[in-house]
Image 1 (tube, rainbow, N blue to C red):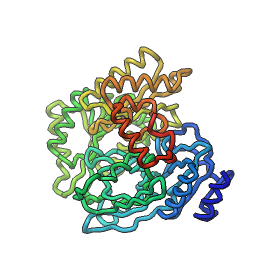
Image 2 (image 1 turned 135 degrees about the vertical axis):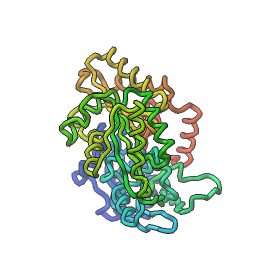
Image 3 (image 1 turned 45 degrees about the vertical axis):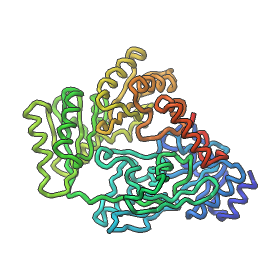
Image 4 (image 1 turned 90 degrees about the horizontal axis):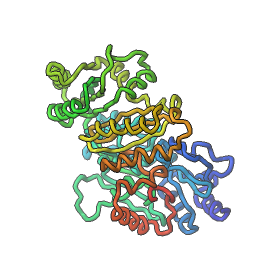
Length: 459
């Protein structure tokens, strides 16, 4: 232990290696709060060369390493053990270049998502990835977990926002593929090995990101619907009318909606009546003459009876108020004992899944409280079970109940938060043995000593 720590201090400087009481509590875990404990050390490199030096030393010593970004993950992917050395990218923050011709931004991995969004906006561009943790999460972690967020329906996941990557491999080699070109059909596209790999194949240090035109305006509406069939009909109609200008389609079941209203700044429900389902819709317009498109479309569907009611935000503050209901999940850890699920179900089956899941829990645990919400337009459903409503029931039993149902519906046990520690046992519910075999072969080829984020992802 002393040998590797002294070697790291010699290579990076004593101020870049923290041990014992000098390790702040934030390095002990992520937002999943699963088994937080102090690592052996925290290394804070300032640049790619220092990351390479640290990995070269750790690989030679067979020392395990846990990469850490903003620590906003919900799957335990950045949680260390007392035997691990954490490599935090927090000092490696900054925007290196905005190329207006190529519509790209070159950034360091420790840059927060919000800083990237604001820099893009200042140059009349938009970086389309958006998450509730935008002020804390770092782009390296967003890419390593292939983060999704609220606008996947329009712009795709983090994978779709990156053109080039710089990655340090387990042996300290630097793989630099920092191209700005959209078309580069020259063999394996290596960047996609590392996007979504959860730090098990290499540590992302820099990236070239795609930028989009800055929209003229965003329009927000909250719609009330009678059932899931109406939801699918509305989604299909909006896609046909608005195309790629439909930037968000968030669905909330009454259990979640009512809790969201009570936890948000809205002290009263937006509608005078309660409804079976609520859809929060965002329309991104790129021309000033498109501002009435959403309103007219919703008016037509109110007349036809597809919608039961609708509210269109008339100001930015009203839009924030409506979004506040959906983003009330930030208060869940305070008001609930949340057991969270981030799953994907084929879009046409989501309504049936929710009904069966709710009935299954009520039959097994009559007092259980479940909250359903999700992006839906990209097949992503979130389920939160309040552990306080089922005292004495282990989270493992709850997870098995949900994931067994996900497997029956041929869904995914992780839509956007990755596998990390929490879902290793259930990865086989979504991936075949052949797929898992390929993943392990890639892992062994790039990290033969198994030092990178051990214990994560693979069961």
